[in-house]
Length: 393
Image (cartoon, rainbow, N blue to C red; front, side, top):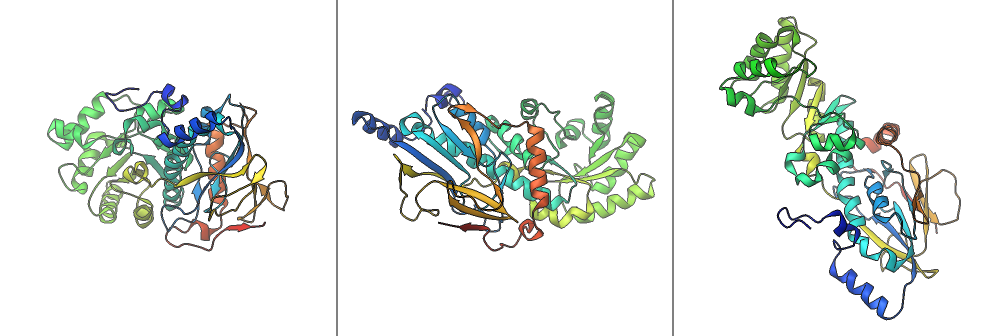
């Protein structure tokens, strides 16, 4: 582990050292008594972290697969990027407990943070009505989570991301405009714009940040003066975003630049994007994504040595369950029982071998199709609808 940056190494995770101590004590007790029960454990979330959420987007399953591969286990899961609801199993792990019990913290951690980000990103994407949305949030989180934030935002529907390391991990090009710092270093918007235009390669988009020293209307005029026909867009990061969009948009049209795009950033979330979506062509969303609330997943036994069991008050009761979806209602049924609809739990690991893994492009496409096909009431960002999970047992 690296004590300077307070991070464990991959080796620490794979060796189970990122667990809670009581799991180690449990394993020690079982080992001393010669017990190693065959268990089926399910992952679900009882309630979403925000009472306005009607759905969530699952991510982190591939990190779980990479953690558990090679172990004598079977893992069934909803697909990476799948839409799911409160109170239904999204994953189950089958195997001898001492082969994976030490990983409970890591399994839940991989799913909880990532799913929070991908869900928030999907909600922002809905609010943006198909317009460009960039992820600007990694300055608001631990830098060692840059890849997690970037990946989950992209699966949730974002168009691009600004973090260099995150983009490299995903095989993408980082995107962005310019910081206020650039203009401040040169003492004026005009000089900062000129330096940018002078030194940046031609294939780097000319999108000017126009609220560093003066009103965006004034700095938009400056951007037109410096970039001319090469100006592709302007970004506003503060103040009355609606008014700025109206004012700047008007001056761009009057000056004969109606195709220059307007971008907004600065403390945006799905609700703020929803309010200003008709005034802008794209959005940069940061803190709301990086600080998206984590999901309180639990991993509980539902079967031990072939006997159904459950913790008191467990939502789906004892016994292994499957999940089927028909017309956006999910039915939780005893494993092996078939009902009409699409089966949602698919093999992720079989006898230790990872199966069914898809590329980032395939996962992004899958999620976008899922989210876009939801009925409008599920896409409502401000009102909770009736539960979509039904239990049959």
